[in-house]
Length: 424
Image (cartoon, rainbow, N blue to C red; front, top):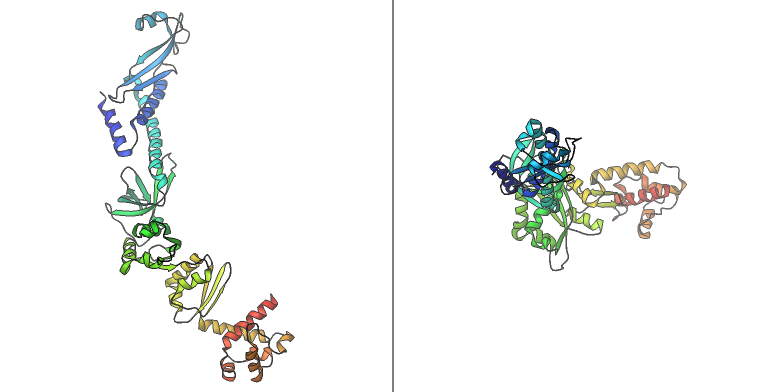
């Protein structure tokens, strides 16, 4: 019995999940190729058989029985053939046993190369079979070693997975032997013909998968995560909706006393998570995302959101290094611009002064301002602002004093908008 070969079979079956018949086929192919290269007179018709139970190797070369040998690599004389098979006849093919130990150094090297190649392919197939349909799932493993700096090799049991440095937050640190959970991002081919499992802890879907683990209503479809944006290691924003009017989507994800969301936050090493109600209406979704802040002014187009907030609310809406505003923009799929109220008012004042010097004769006519009632127009005229130019040249503090109840900046905003439309 070839105990070494049997041990290899058992190891590959147990540790790599590669079936014995695949291993045997790989070795048979390698020995067949090696035999052709190293044994003279063996010809191309080589048969290699390995006993799966004992590991014994039998190698045969087929030769045609002829009267007179012309090509000794493929032919054998009738006399020589009958020494091995007395009843054989001319024209038959005779299988000649070739001792494997005669393969030599070249044969062994060739066998190793082909076996390695075949087994890599077999191992890749095993990886694909087990993991290719599990993309988006959370996988648990153990940190085995580090390569190329901070890229982590994670032991999943039968295979090793890769957690690239870019795929986990910069603030996270791991030690060899430590347990780690991550999202199975993809299974991809390698340059050497194998396959590798790629993990991620920084992908937004990792947070989604963690919530699905904690929230049964997400798993059964009662509640859904409609949108998610993440700055890994710092903050995640999630917009959720409920398909059952009796179920509060935000409360469901947060859990009683925050138990559900706390488990997710703990796994993310205290990353901040904001959960808000989802709306198909972008303006309503924006209100939900910045609540309890109430914007003083909002303009939204297909590509951009312009928002004015009070000076006190500005830091909250922007967030550290603009992170909060950036995540809001990602969820809305629009570029977002936030301005302080004092800055916006200064800008309006400057623009009003600039436009008031325009030679446009319509500025010297009786004021007509879209969105402003006729009563306010009459009050402005009665207070001496009988042309649009006079309104525009007024100081911000003048009009509210002379026309109580009128906000200069609201008025300025409407006037400037009207002028832009006329010019555009």
